Length: 335
Image 1: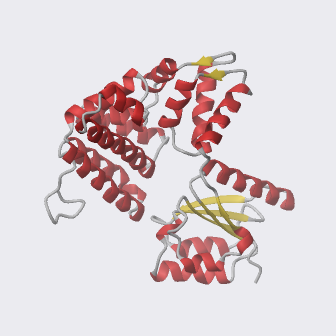
Image 2: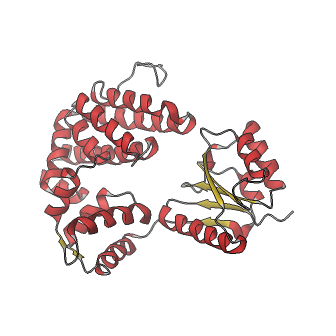
Image 3: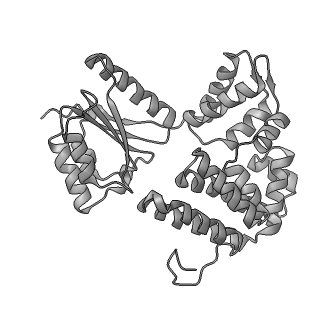
């Protein structure tokens, strides 16, 4: 059986991964004279038997179906794995399955062995040098420029892949316009005072242990659809790790300004937020919070999306009100 319609796309570089899929969609559209039907499923909330049934049943709307299956690393054993492996052995000729994951090593070897070598792709993150060049080129093509401190600040604020970089840079291009020169203070003001709420404005309220405002911002983020539970967890973990590093440096008697430089915490507003968080949380609490975030990350990846809002509210409560502390031996949902 020809397995050309099975792909395994791994790695954290979402921008290039999306481009690869986009090019495949264009090729299929040209081949059949119409766009294929594209469906998205997530391993932590979709039954494999339903996904396979969709792959095997001819679409009513198109000659070809493309299914994007995210979080493939979750499929490790049991019936879900067996059903998928059976399908990979005899895939449909009228559908294409993309198995996607931002990890590389965590995919079941049984799944990897079923995918043709030519259809296995790893999309690595851009190096720091290439990311800087990418941003400079992006703004140069729009007759704009960005100063170096602003560029460093932008890299710290945005997820480490070209998809998120492009989204953020497009918004900045619209905001500053042609001939614009993006400076650090302007970028800081834009990020923290734009109407959009994000994981950074959420952290700003968490930093001062303002529970009601944190929940309000969390609600706005979820309603906007700009981010999901997994990305919020990732952003909060990144900032809490930085806060822990800040505390450790200060405990070693480094001057606060030197710490900001070491950790690349740019801009007075951003520095003020981390200073407040340093005053509000003990080092022990930050460690507890990082463990808590890791536990919740596992919970989000293995639970249905319809309970994620409640779990996120519980997470914010446990961070702000409890400092990440739990009673010994208690399950994640029982504090």
